[in-house]
Length: 170
Ligand code: FES
Image 1: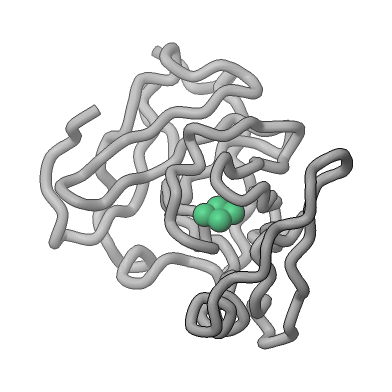
Image 2 (image 1 turned 180 degrees about the vertical axis):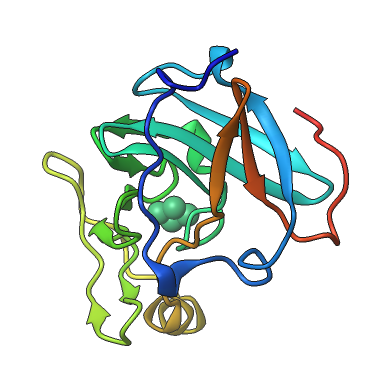
């Protein structure tokens, strides 16, 4: 199959390549026929869960773990390049790795700046958590997304996946 008409791959910010992925071998993730524009899929290698998304900026492969508290981003919603997490309403730009909306719990952003808790419009304010919970929230850092370099070969999306993980599970 020719890859001439294959969807584009989203450029990866070089500083946001996942640990060990830059020099890892390419491994097959999924058939492109199983991905649709605006769609997301979860692909697991051992205990490594990856998110594959087809955004307007191209196909993206990143960890299927929210950079806040690790919820599966594949359960969220994709609006353009921004994926929204189901757990605390954080939203993340898959084309840049940056936070688009900070989680409702507040905490530290990737650069260490504190963000206060917030409630969505129409929702009651959250009760103050216990002292230890408040401290944990205040010190929880929401990091930038990390990416896996990818390519397309004969209609199959492949990504550089570190060797410690074996076998596609889904
Ligand atoms: S785990 Fe995703 S916003 Fe909190």
